[in-house]
Length: 418
Image 1 (cartoon, helix red, strand yellow):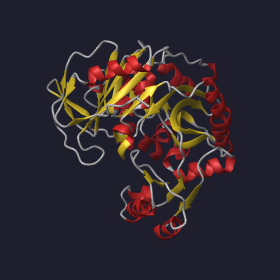
Image 2 (cartoon, one colour):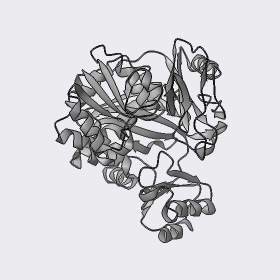
Image 3 (cartoon, one colour):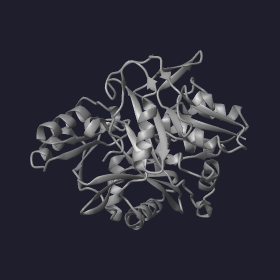
């Protein structure tokens, strides 16, 4: 049997890597893929993740494909899973209506408010003038969010009115994130520590994976601009069984129930971005898919057959699955292009030393030409290693990061420190 994975980043490389362990899968395609993925799958660089018609035609032309895994947010929000299902093909990922929980922050915040799911207080605005009027009496710091998808960069933390006004102008008047900024959410700034929980969901059952912690800021000590993620580790060192049980009862199950009450069957991966403070656990954000780079840190620990889990989700038989995890700590350190998340150059050759056997280098923004790898994006590589504890995993990861080089290479040196 054959599988098509849609997407071309580190998350998709990790998914392909996990699927490859199933010996019954004879071939993996990846659209568009990247340089590293091309080592384990046939990449389709001419088919972009948002080319819904192109993907459908490819699946039609390749009857051996038993499943299409839709990994990124954009094609999910555009309805790729719906399109494939309507044409009789199996696809893993939520439908367009279910993907709203990520594609519209207004939708998700209103859903949480309606069903009593703990989250930050907020206001929704359709125009810049009323938003800026609200900022005159708001408490700071405050968070300004574009309603729609913005490559993980549509959330701006503002320490005062000046910064908040600038954020509103950039999103709503300058259209920095296009139509995603037609509406904005302005919400209270929560303090505490963050944790990410990915969960498989089939519309009836929700099965949380092991915890992880992401590092969003571009520079050490959580300084610099927000990025798609500069590293992650698993499990969280602070969010234990007690906290997980409470989150399951107060957030995970109620979210599934809320979606069902709205007539939405969510089948795929539901991502919970949580804030833990002395006021309890609250939802910062939902994603309707695997996170990046959390996926890299989480999937290397998974002992189950990922393809089997995907099938159980599609067939709403997730209750038959018992997740098993390696009793190890994992860490993923992202190596980025200098200048990311703003302007950066592409096309630099990447030099690799001998990477340790128990580490995996997942490719995000690379291309392979004549047997050599070149940079082709902002986030380039994710060096992922495991150890008996976080300290050992960190030591391994950074030792292997130093075996890689390219011009203007940038990475944080403090992933997993706090």
